[in-house]
Image (cartoon, rainbow, N blue to C red; front, side, top):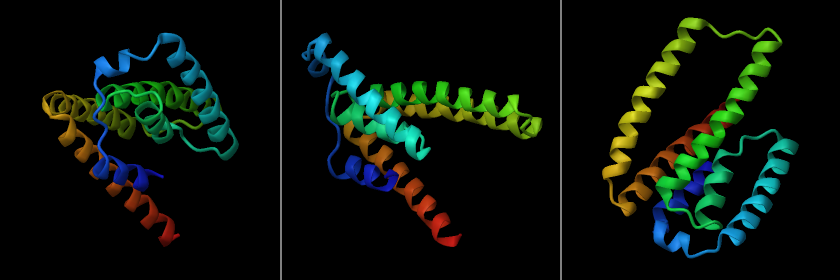
Length: 149
């Protein structure tokens, strides 16, 4: 899914603007959000997958979010999902190596800030292509690891 989503962003960039998104009524967006959220939640619950990529696809394709807003919203939602999973894991005694955990947090915050600076200065088409390339590479790596099993 990640690989295909990346290709979608490269081939057919999301060129939605905040102004065009705001033309859709709040009621329609709320209903679409509710229906899509329920569907993504059910799919992820049944197959145990994370919904970040599905959420990104829905936010850009169905709800008409511009890419910057969709990525930020998706990451914000994933943060709560990851926090819930981590706390559950910690509660059953699965504590991580603290040094590795701290390093991951620090480097994630640093690189998220660097990426945000890039995203805020980039043109929409460039941002779509960069997002697409990252997703294609990530998808290829995931498929490669699956083949090596």
